[in-house]
Length: 358
Ligand SMILES: *Cc1c(COP(=O)(O)O)cnc(C)c1O
Image (cartoon, rainbow, N blue to C red; front, side, top):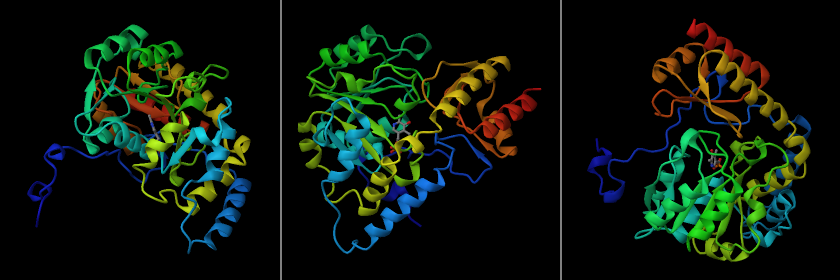
């Protein structure tokens, strides 16, 4: 038997570990920030009808420019964006990979602020882009001064800002994003995977796009839209960015079925997003209840809560698994992350935690 070490793999990939959130079949899975509410039956029916029409034409390649999908996404985003401003791929992970392929690569670097989304550094490795990091402020915040200082020190080709940040839930202010843009001649990517869970009415990085052609805002249908299994992520930016991504994307990368499903889901945006308020409520409840149990939850604008004060994260992970509950041990000493589930799931988690703690 051959092992990976025996293969002539790229030197810069030797010794790396792949993305590895456990996929276990459990009663209550609160470990990868999915929307745990299934999509409404009526919307599912409508999506199935669109898929049925699309399948009759799968002998042909799909629209390489996914024009209808880009139009639907632009309408959803608002902010005066048109389809020329919008790009999409199989999950925002693929969008981020394409950004690194086009603007990063060997000899170039991308700056991130850990703890942050683990895929950012994994995608950097896969594209041969050097991953450089800088520290956050207290409570995982990012002030304009901190970000500008890091940019001046590292002179990265790309800056990744995750807002709200995974796994901490911390927002990044509009001021910090604008300051980062001013401080670099490179690309600034704001990963807004959880934007819909932020407090209503506050500006997102979309408000900064006008006049900033190097600012890229990535989004996903995986979280708020309860569409993780369909794999649809997207990007809002200057139309020239699309031209860059066309150079690296695989032709026809978005299948006809994916396009049909996403367009149908977006036609039902209010129903698809109906559970977001409820999830925000469960998140806020987690913050209150975790504190009452003696843990140290952090402020979160996303659909999950990071909490400190865990003596032994691995032991707590195992104890919850005994109760058929999966949460995330991120390898941050003393900390764990839990996704806000349905009310019943959140209750089950909190009750199990109370029993384990007692
Ligand atoms: C979940 C997540 C994504 C989404 O990835 P998809 O490929 O769209 O499913 C992107 N960024 C962050 C920070 C995430 O947590």
